[in-house]
Image (cartoon, rainbow, N blue to C red; front, side, top):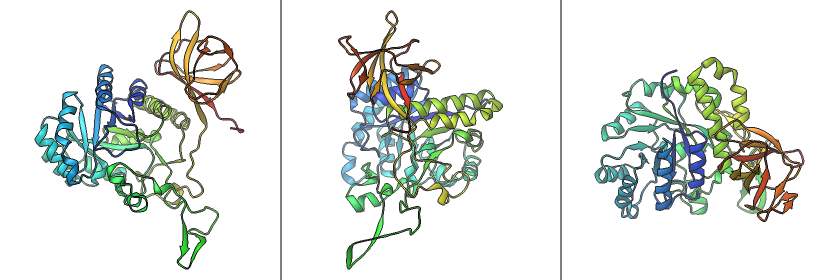
Length: 413
């Protein structure tokens, strides 16, 4: 395979950006404190964004910044200064959905690349050509498109107009994510980044004169989570994504954990590299790739709209909880080669005797039984019960900062 495929990772904060970069992303997308659609992500201050861009570029990774709100009049006052700042710190592109935001950015910083967000409902090649004529470099496909429809778009646009598409992560029940439920039910506008995720709630019907009597909407054993989609996963279909003309494979998850980002990006990096190297190798490892992404929390997997419209098999009717097979128990901060001790920041409780896997960003993963734990005063302890407690753990192999410890979840977890 010779055609490049970009792996695009979410970066909800500076730590997640560094994890995404180190675990194999070709590009990351992130938001500042304004103009993006993930207000519940920690997002980036100006200084953090500048540091993040420098870190990413030092590792050959691009940075795209979200400016994809549907703007009201008052939102435009600060936009010109904001995009000038993005240009000054050498951001590689911005993501835009609103035509007004697009026009202001083009007028203010005409040489800053613009990608058209999935929020703009990009479902046909005429729309793609429209945006290209205005100066867009990339179109992010609507999530409601099949691979055949995307191929039809790809075949009818210039080769230098890139196609990006979501391939992994949470699915929104509303068309291209343009949801009014959150605003109506809670006053939090999903189209300005404040979604309360009412699609994950359990719903009942009440009759006007019987307010305390709840009637299930679906009267069978599956329950009533009627909007609750499984998570998208296309790691076993990378050849089909490439053949459809998709250049950038986008991972959802700016409000997910660092562990989630590292786990999923590492798995897709390996799958893409194997596919580019040898199709037969990729095909032989498809179950392995699925096993690896399943080590991050998920809601079951679906292929979304890629192979046709979803059915009831693509929904979850009993719970909005995640499936969790592994716990993220520690993040490596450093390693002393002489003592063989790793400095670790605890993320979930672990104890002497636990068997953990070290997930490395620069080497093979390995399994280790914890035999010794020391506190910061080098006093031996038997467990790590306190969140973000810093501890020393004996390891049999060298590790590096940003490597992660995970433990398989037992039946009693």
